[in-house]
Each structure stands twice: as C-alpha cells, then as structure tokens.
Amino acid sequence: MLEVDVIIPVYKPTRKLLALLDGLMGQTLKIHRIILINTEKKYFDSFIRGMDFQEKYKRVSVYHIKKEEFDHGGTRNYGVSLSKAPYFIMMTDDAVPGNEQMAERLMSHFKNPDTGMAYARQIPGTDCSLLEHYARSFNYPKVSCVKSAENLEDMGIKAFFASNVCAAYRRDIFEELGGFTGHTIFNEDMIYARGVIDAGYLIAYEAGAEVVHSHNYSGLEQFHRYFDLGVSHAQYPKVFSGVATESEGARMVKTACPYLLKKGKPWLILKMVWQSGCKYIGYFMGKRYKKMPVKLVKAFSMNKEYWK
Image (cartoon, rainbow, N blue to C red):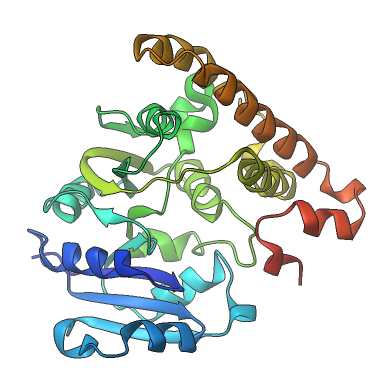
C-alpha cells in the first residue's frame, strides 16, 4: 500500500479544518500522517480548547510557526521536510474532501513514473455565488487530463495550471526539482508545476478527486489578489513569459455570458465585467510593481506580510 502524508498550512482555524481532517480520516486510501503547519500557536490553542484534539486525531501532528516566518513556498517546504513518505498531498485549511476517493484517485496517476504531480477538482461550496460557481467549473472541468510541455503551445498557461489547494506530489521528483521556490508572494504551486513539465514530467488533473473550495471575493478583493498574481508573474518571467495569460480571462468572460443568460440572471454580467476589470487592473499594476512607491505596493497587495 502507498504511504502518503498530507501537509496543510493552517492560520486561524475554523470548523472547516475539522471537516477537512474528518474527510481525510475517512479516505479509502489510508493517510499515513497529517502534518499541520500552524501560524501563531495562540490561535490554534484557542480553537481546540475544550476538545480532546490529539485523542480524536491521532495521526495528526501540529507544528507552530510565527506569522513573520510564514512563506507560501518556504512553509510548505518545511512541512515536506517533516515527512518521510514517498508521496504527499498538499492542501489548504479551507478545502474539504468532496468524496472518499479523493486521495486514491489522485495517487492512481503515479502508476506512471513520469507523473510529477496530480491535482484535484475544486467544486463550489453551498454558499458559493453563481459567478464563482462558473469560475470553478471553468478552471476545474468534469473531464480529467494529463499535461506535458507539448501542451504549452496550444494551452498556454493552462498547460501548467495546477493548484495546491489539493495536489499530490512524488517526493523524488520534488526533491530533484528543489521543491517550492522560497519566499514567494503567491503562485508557488504553478511556479513548481512549470518546473515539472520543463523537466519532462507530467501534470495530471483528476476530476474524480474532489475538494469543496470556493471564495466569494468582492471586486476589491479580486484587485488585491490579482495584484499579487501580477507581482508573481513579474518576478518569474522565465516561468510566465511566452505563454498566453490575459487571454484566459477574456475567454472566461466570453463563455460566462451565455451561461448567465441561460440561468436567467443577465444582470450578473455587469457584476462579472466589474470584477473582471478589477482583476485586470490589479494584474496590470502588479506586473509593474517595481515602478511604484513601496507604500502603494503594500496597500495594493493582499499578502502584506510578504513585503516585510
């Protein structure tokens, strides 16, 4: 049987974390160990007060770091260093397994020794807006696929689109590629994914492995998020240059219009255009962050701790 660990960065945990852990404990493929890298011990201690957390979740190990120590890539690398399993699954603390076969379906792709990583389908939560529902279906369709460097020309950035909200990795390839890039503002999963296909390995998207994960971001929140995305693209031109990026956003807007009309909610088209404009302006400015005053960069960024 495959030995698989799950690594989860945690910050200000909610009941969703317990649903996540319960979902992992009930997987058809037994998880060997669950490693939580928690930011700020006081929040975690407050959350578990009154419950026998360690007794209920015997396979869970908790490690604490300070807020100033957190880094999107570095913290995940730290989690990997605490695991000895040949395979591991990265998740975020706001994603909940959507089925009991999630881990098993992801790991099935590693029967092919050329598979470097496999990521899950994200499905919307019950409180998800119609616009976010469509965005999830656009980025995470019902059909699985396997991607390689050969897809860069026809798929553009989608060739190495892969989210570590829920993604499985083969340790030997992870170590060969040097793991996640340290001190990243954002996008450590796609930076790594580009390295996977550039090295000649494969990225699998498994639609049968589901996690419930969605956000109802406002236009302003989208601006901040896409500002950081633009910063990431500017900092790693070798990863993101030469592939179509903005065109994906335009394609989603174009295909979403008939969807909203079909749903009988044409007024949401205006909201979508507004949010798409916020995304584009945020991304545009983020790519040019080096020309901006530091105070403005910090004000526009979602990940403000990064600039410290």
